[in-house]
Length: 315
Ligand code: NAD
Ligand code: UDP
Image 1 (cartoon, protein in one colour):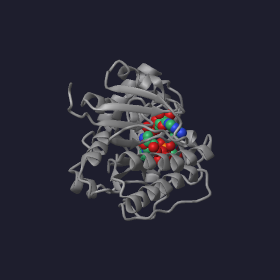
Image 2 (cartoon, helix red, strand yellow; image 1 turned 90 degrees about the vertical axis):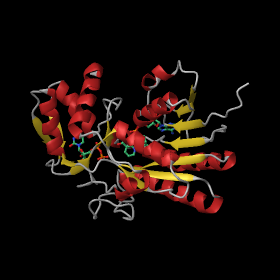
Image 3 (cartoon, protein in one colour; image 1 turned 30 degrees about the horizontal axis):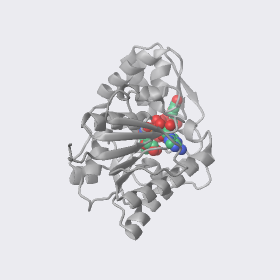
């Protein structure tokens, strides 16, 4: 009998874009991985290749309901992440963030597991400070169409730090900036997937506003590396820590780059800017560099090429 204990890791939202990459990485490293998902935005297709692995298990569950599992670590990723998905049922979105956090923190407390929260740059809202450092408290509308997501994620951070102070739960909080790569949902409305799909179909590229708003795009492999380093790092460093690529681009620059890389004949058209759309976003990642010795390696062009190759097979 092998008495060597293998770390058992729960990944909530494991069938989604980021979750599936994380599960893949953890399975390949020999951990026992439990992937929990309600398949709202995730899909079995994203993890079907893992189902044959003896150290991978799939659980269909909705995080607004409690679940009891024996695990050593929890990565809490369950939550729709694209604006059209999280605004589809805003009450459900905030319930997923808040009740999901309560249920997972309760589980972590009960079984003494280490738990990492996938928070977001949206906690900074439409930032008045640029680039964004972790000390910045943000500029968030409490009652707008994005609030269900932003405030849900802010409340989840609060819960993490309250469980940490009150119950000594071993927490980690990462704030993820816009991340892209293979397995993004082709219809999730996020800018990278939208533009690539539009370009591959030679449809118009829909730039919202005048395209001068900025985002900083991180390739998925870099992001997963940062998350795992945070989970495996010293218990004293709980975050929050920014994870993202500081390379900042306007949306128009992104559109031009994608047209060039796909060789598309698409034209750019302009549509109204959605309410509360942040004008600029760029992570200051000095803390992640210092504490985790982490920084992204994949340049935008290289990551876009890999993502375009993926979408060529999907579209
Ligand atoms: P995604 O929509 O692809 O994945 C989310 C997953 O959670 C899906 O598989 C979905 O089915 C599942 N889910 C949703 N509600 C659930 C519920 N109530 N119970 C169980 N499962 C549920 O999105 P993603 O891009 O992979 O994002 C993953 C996490 O990372 C999210 O928490 C998101 O807020 C965070 N994040 C992502 C980005 C990004 O750029 N991708 C940026 C910041 C933060
Ligand atoms: N955007 C755009 N065209 C699209 C989709 C998005 O111009 O087809 C813009 C959007 O208004 C925002 C930026 O791209 O300014 C990033 O949008 P996304 O939904 O990907 O992420 P988030 O706004 O949550 O950062």
